[in-house]
Length: 262
Ligand code: ARG
Image (cartoon, rainbow, N blue to C red; front, side):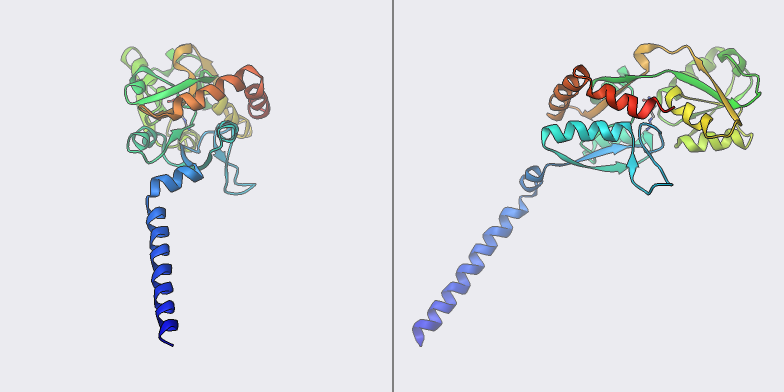
């Protein structure tokens, strides 16, 4: 009888000890999450066809950038989840470690390179002036005296600030691209400066109410790249796969899928 009790007590102790070991192992959280390799991707899902929510189809974030991220992450054996935020919050989110990488049609400017690292450029676009149809605004000079909208924290905002030094215009910044479009449609903005691939989608969906003209764009300042926290080991990993996929035509296939329908 005594033996039985002893055995019972010691086995309970043993189980307790073992399970304590188990939890303490689990609690070294970094290791655990590295095993699962779930990365966080930051984006600003207001940017069709790069990243957006097709409300007719659901509430999932889809687009060229999402497919590209999946292609690279799959190859490297990572999973990832998307964290949606305003464009101007993306670089701070990388710096604070809230996200592991950013795909958001983000241009690798000198200024940004001071704070984050970038992959190679995977897509190049130009800027476009978007207006109501018949606005008469055809060139940058025509923006003189006009109210012009841009996305907060974007290179288009920087570009417009530069332009406004020689061509006097009233600049207005908004966090999300659809806000810029609404302001034009409501007649509060005369124009907005938006990347052409994105602008074309809004023009097409406006039922003839909007139009746009591409403006001269500095090639260096118009590409999209993947951004990482400074010093992240992911930069080299991702870039190696990105390079391969650009060479073997897989990125081209995605470009066709997402941009040719425009
Ligand atoms: N290419 C521009 C930039 O880097 C605009 C990108 C905006 N992206 C977005 N998802 N809203 O500043």
